[in-house]
Length: 401
Image 1 (cartoon, rainbow, N blue to C red):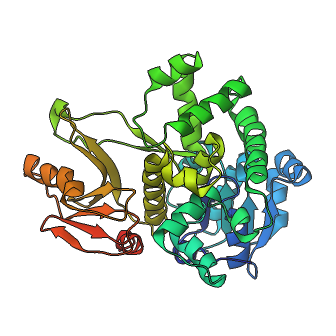
Image 2 (image 1 turned 90 degrees about the vertical axis):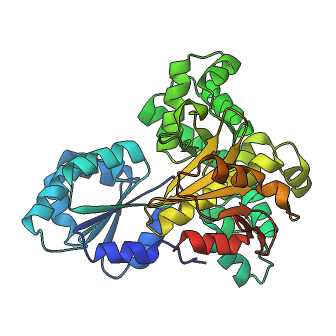
């Protein structure tokens, strides 16, 4: 079963306007599947996961390019970085022919740096993350299953949002994540980044998962794990590069020393958090100590996915002041700031809006718009003139505008 991805139209549009299109993203997010589906009739598919093909490309890249044809999908190109300069020469040879090369890669930092340097102005770069709220809703609709906010939240946590475990219900979730991390650690982390002690790295990921939606404290992680702060900092960068985690930075533009300046850490897939922390049923998910942080993590991950899938240039922040005024999420659209509070609740009132109201009074010089409370409630209504609750599906649509 193929589920149409939200980002498809954005990729197709870029394909018509650029000689090359690059799609990055974490392993198993569906990069190969979406590109083979969209470009099956026009492009030859080559994967560098195949060691024989990889060796051919490394030993004679020019010959390899010349024998592949005019329109090609090159999958997992980070294994053959030598090929990028030859692709550049091919593009320069026919600069007005768009859509010739479709390129994928799982390692964001190395891939984008090389492509940005070599193919500047010739390439459109996109990111494909695991299934979004809309895409999981499509699966539930096809199977005639309810798609209320709570149900999709529970599903996304206990099942995860990676395509394979969503379209194939026979797969055991724990076994899949176990295999995913074994492959991820061995192929990507150990071989590419040389992290050192894999056992320490696994402990680090488990500890980080237990602290999702919290302020990132490098020193606390260092002390708890008994490793150097610089090592923790490097490992955070690796997880961020591989799109396992997302760091939400504080909004402190011209606000002085009153604002906390450490980022908060979230995982791109709440299913990973549940796997790493041993959450396996709905009761623990909704009533356990991580219930609130996991719902906040879910809302942030879906916000990130929606902005990326719609190619929007919005910026995301949070705010925490010295006197404990905290805004979970600030979405900036141009100069406009939209504060959002995240509540794991279906019953909301004025008390849930107090931080947004305080923010508007405290920072009246900022262009702060109507605040939103994101929750499990499947309805939208006004709490006061400054704050409204918002149904999750409407929040997702609003992000896409």
